[in-house]
Length: 369
Image 1 (tube, rainbow, N blue to C red):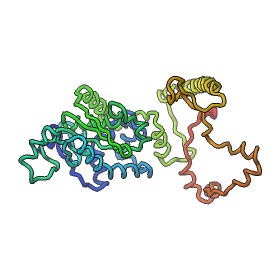
Image 2 (cartoon, helix red, strand yellow):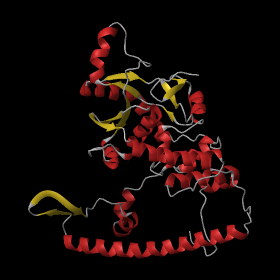
Image 3 (tube, one colour):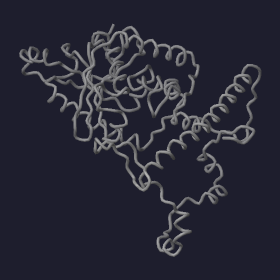
Image 4 (spheres, rainbow, N blue to C red):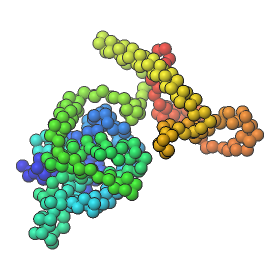
């Protein structure tokens, strides 16, 4: 039997695997980056993405923008760890690879780094002065999750709070669940500013997390039952491109399935009506606020200059049609040609390719989308 690498985990696969090998290992269980997606807390992936990926039913679609961000994050990982080491005084060890929980082999962890905390580091270094720090030493007591963010994304995720954002925190707690370590650290490089957090092991939270993810693994992945798609925009895009569409093909539903679909359609119509009412209410409130500003653009508190309440600036979309109508001669001076795909010719000459890039539109018999 393979010996334990951490208090509760074995080393399943070493670091340095090819991407294809690493993806194969990932399919054998749930990793830290999967947890937020399973719980519906990842803006880019949902439970259905994880399910299809683990079942081997999802071809890898790599968004160039997200791919660039991932490569950037991987390259900056070492810098984040180095800065954390300097600021915290703790020792940082290279990632050993993919760790696997000893009793639940589907629980996986790819920790960015392991940590030898300062209280242990001083006594550990003395008898090992000629040996560089590296993976596999028993003195590690924590995991380190390294992130890099622009100030815009950091503001969206709220990196300035007293606790780390939900996504990195869930990832760190999952690593504690797998490794058995007593604590974790989350370090984020926000542009050129490092911020870091210490998370103590929370058995109640970890137990709840393991229960939810176990349920997903057993009831969906192992049983082959698709989870509810959820409401993420990324899942909508996934569903739109998941299958090779058969034009005008019909699927027949009977009995309980029809009743379920009728209930969902009725709920959809009710929500659309609510959305109309909320949109009217929102417009009424915003118009009252705009009227209070008059010719001004910014509302501030009189006794606290600089504290902005709201704004109504002239910085929205440019009104092309109105500009052409009011200033036709000036508009003509600023017209320029733009390269665009000739969709009509593409549809005639290569209809299959044209069809494969068209979005699928959801409509009901009344024509509403």
